[in-house]
Length: 319
Image (cartoon, rainbow, N blue to C red):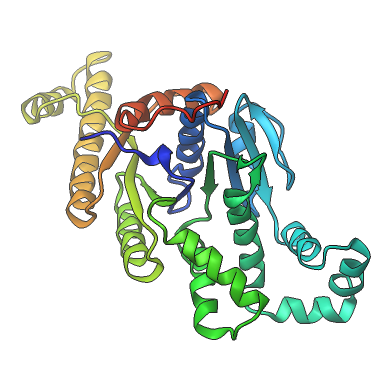
């Protein structure tokens, strides 16, 4: 498989069924980019922060905080995103307080459909396009997006507003947000799954939604926790014959047979995913770790690196 130039984009969206390891994949991608000299921000959206702790750093909250060299994290929440959007729009805090902190106004704002998603996504996309000293503040923003359904809802908001909102400030914001999301030179969406029935089914549905509803460029399919195929069918048959043997041979054969069956099942679900999703499949091996920490993220990043070997070198002048 040729090297994926994913890290050349400005925005990587990482999503998948809950529990498939998308935060780990998002963090590993960010770590690889940071170690190539890119200045990277990882954004979580209204979540219990996982990225900063994975990197061995304290939770960042809404404000960006450096976790490692070149690598920053933030957790975007609706209230803080609304406050920042209000201050950017009205310019003055006193005016913001008079409008957005007004009890009646806040009541009506809560009734506006998808406003929370719009301001949170707007915060992330604002970071993508913000410049400092004539260059992007971030070379790469990684969005550790919510799980499948919520991610589609989040990314769908700008397009939906363009279909319903009349000309005005809200529509102008939706226009630039939608344009950034569907620009394949800048944005790429990654799908994460496990080689299991439900995650693969959900990945297939997600890929169809991305292609037909969102219009966001698709990058790769990351198949996480792929068990190693250690035994041939003939060897698995021999293991089955040895399961009833006395210890330690019998229990050892039973454990080995279980691993063989799991690898065989994973291979079938991988084949199903590959048949249904026309994306490069990046396999992340099943890792045995006592703790899921920076060491585990580094191991995942090492597994991803060969697939990303085609990425461009760091930007000139970036440390």
